[in-house]
Amino acid sequence: MRPSVRIPSSRYTPGLLTLVLVGWSTAAGAATVPAGFAETLVSDGISSPTAMAFAPDGRIFVCEQGGRLRVIKNGALLATPFVTLTVDAAGERGLLGVAFDPNFASNSFVYVYYTATTPAIHNRLSRFTAMGDVAQAGAST
Figure (cartoon, rainbow, N blue to C red):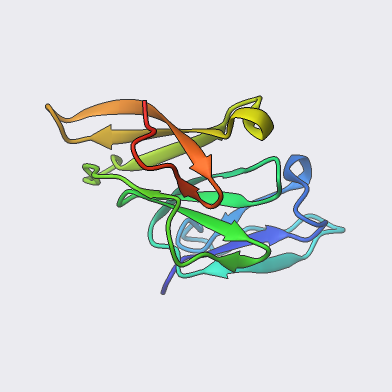
C-alpha cells in the first residue's frame, strides 16, 4: 500500500493537527481521531514519509526517506519535488527533517536535515532558497 498523508479537517491549522501517515500506523490499527475532527486525505503517492512541515503560505512540505522533499499545494501533490538529495537511506537514515526560517516570507530559506553520503556518511543540515515550489539551483549552504 502506498503511504498517504491524512490530516484532520479544521482547514489545516498546524497547531491543531494530528498527522496520520498510512504506513506509520501501529500494528493495532489507525489512530483515533479526536472528537470534532474528521480524517481527510490530503495526498497519496508519497514514498516512505519521514517528516513534514507547514510553510507560512499554507503549502505542506513532506520528506521522503529516499531524499525527495515533496510539496503539497492547494491539496495536490506537485509532480516536481522541491529538491532531491543524494542520501544514505539505510535503516533510520535518509531525508529526516524540514523547517522554515522564521523570516521565510522575506528570505525564502528552507532547512533540511539528512544523511549525506560524501565525503563519508554523516548527518548534514543544509539551507536552500525557495524559488516558487522548487529550490533555487546552486543555492544550498
